[in-house]
Length: 452
Image 1 (cartoon, rainbow, N blue to C red):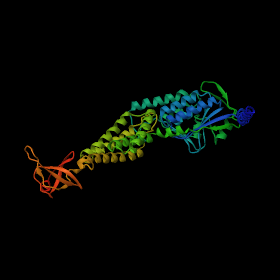
Image 2: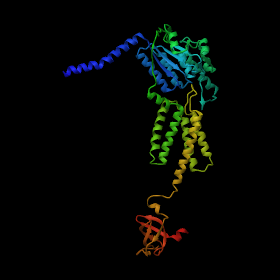
Image 3: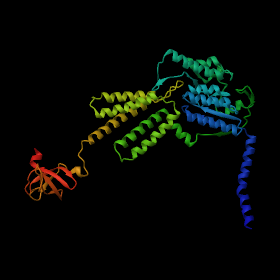
Image 4: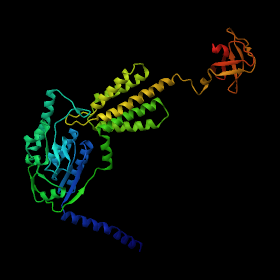
C-alpha cells in the first residue's frame, strides 16, 4: 500500500509540470521566439559578456531572432569588437534597433548598429559620431597627426571589413569616423546605413515578417515573425554589480578608497573598519584593473601624488608639495583609463571630487601621526615622568654607594608609596619630581631644581 501511495503521489506531483512543459513546447512551435536584450549604457567588458551570453543562449534555444535594443553613448573599443564578432558569427539573425525616441547609437554603438543582420532605428533617434577619441576628463586631446591617421585608418578598416558585406554604404559610413558625422533615422535610411525605420518592436516584427535577409556568411534566411513570443533577458545580479565596478569613475573611487582605508589602518592600528573596507575596495579595484585598459603611467602618478601628500605633512613646503600632489593625482585620474577607440575615462567631476578629500585626509592623518610622536605617554611607567610626589621620610644615604652619592627614601606618588632615589638629601614632607622610572624604583629630584 505504501508503494502504491508513493507512486500516486509522484504521478500527481509531476503531472502539472509535464503538462506545462508540453504546453510550452507546443506554444514555442506555434509562435516564433524572439530573444530581446538591451544595451542601455556605456559599452564595457561586462556589457559585452552579457550580450555574448544572450546571443549564445538564443542559439541554444533555437530562437528565430535576437533583438538588441540600443541607446548608448559608446564605450570601449575592445568590448565593441567582442560584441561585433559574436553578432557576425551568430547562427541566429540579429537585429540592432536604436530605440526609443531620443535614443542614440553613438561612437561604438554606431559600429555595432552597422554589424547587425538588420539595422533599424525608431523615429527621433540618431546614430554616428564615431570618431575615435583620446580624451582627458572627457575633453578631446590633440595628438600627433601620424598617430591620428593610424587610429582613423584602423577604425575605418574595421568598419569596412563587415559593412560592405552587409550591403550598406561604406563611403557614407566612413564619414561618421573620419568626420565625426551623425545621422538621424531618416538620413541613415536614405544613405543606406540602416534597413528600416520602425515605430515600435511590434512594428519592427511586422515589417520583418516574411522578409528574406542575407547573412554575413552569404546564406539567406527567411524571417517568420508572425505573433512572436518575446523573451526579454536582463543582466544577472552579478553582471549588474560588476558593470558598476568596471565603470572608470567607480574604479577610480574604489582605488583611492582602498588605498586610503589601508593607510588609515596602518597609521591608526586597531580601528579595524577602515582596514576591512579598504581591503575590499582595493580587491574590487584590482578586479576592474584586470578588465579595463589601465594606463600604468596614470597609476604611477597617483602613487606619486600620495607620496607628495605625506611629504607635505612632514615638511614645511608652504603648500608646494600639496599642490604638486593634487596636480599629479588629477593627471593620473585622467590618464588612468586608456582606449584609442573611445573617450571613456574618469570624468573631471569625479577626479576633482576624489582628489581634494584624498589630499586633505592623507595630510591630516600624517600630521596626527607625526604629532603623536611628541605626545607624552598616557599609559605605562613613562607616564610618571615629570609627575610631582611628596617625600614621606627623610632620604638617607645609600650604604656602600660609590661617588656620586645617592640618597634613598619613600615618596607618595599618586596615592601610592614608591621607593625613591635622589642625588641629594631630601627632608620628610619635601616636594620632589620624578625624572626616571626603573622597575619599582623612581628617581627623583627636588621640585625646585626640576623647575629650574
